[in-house]
Image (cartoon, rainbow, N blue to C red; front, top):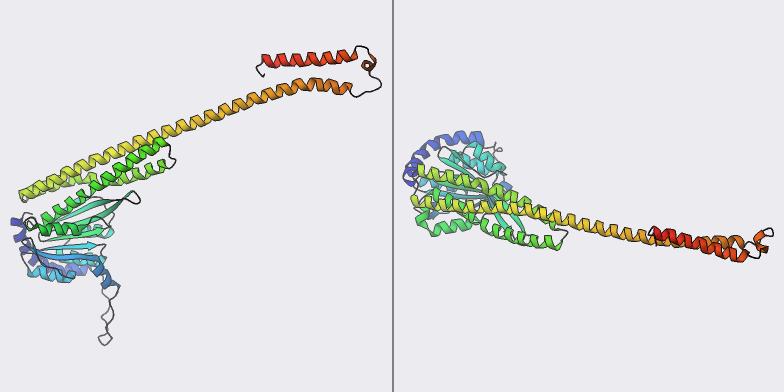
Length: 392
């Protein structure tokens, strides 16, 4: 896909594509409604036209690294690219309709499987080659400061000999900055679609750096909350762990993808400087992937520490409850012991306080000392027994 080989291939391929477009359109384009009555008054712009305008973020035609045209619609882009054999089209779409993707497939001979992936979205990062067209799926990420969470977007890129098509599902990445950067460096843009692909990859990977910094700050805060005993920290650890799983799925496949892309660039004799740039992106991806792996490991260890601290806190609370229960039992034993000691003289006094006529002890000279002595003996005996059992 070098510039020397891609440009002649693009001119030769256009004539072949023209003969195939009618078949593509019949196979891929949905049935059109019946023609409107020519006598009817003109209608206002409908939802389909509004959707096309909203979906096409920007389309531009370049020659030798310089923008020569900015078509308003896809149809104008197709027509001007046919009229410019040495040009390159860069079409940016955001959440396009199926009809728009089908028209692109018919114009640029995109493989049906890649078009289907772009329609459905929710794809994992991957790199596929269909003839002279590359299909790349990327997962971009951005850190949202207010909710302290990571937002992921999906980007599909079609790279052909004379065109680049980006299909964005989500807010990230900001491809307008990529386009502005490339237009400010025409010497890089003139290298062709491969240079645009490099710039997109570089922007996506650079977008991971703020996410890594934000996640590192979150982990530092979580560590403080764990040792402070914050009850909400477990939920925050779980949510951040899920985000790191998603982040890992976005970054880990890029390592192999970039090495495969570098090998392809070498095979097709792509500019050596561009290969160096791509190797730099691969190094950044590797570093980011390693950081994400370390984040997952750190969160796992923090979760283990948090579980240990929670268990220790629960054990301390159970120990405190057990000690309180033990002290309560001791108090109950003391109260019960004294109640029993006091109950004995009360019982004797109650019996002799009945003053029945036929109670021999009432007329006995030693009856009173005997009753008092009996009370004393019973109380002292109970006191000794309870004291021996450590109830008092």
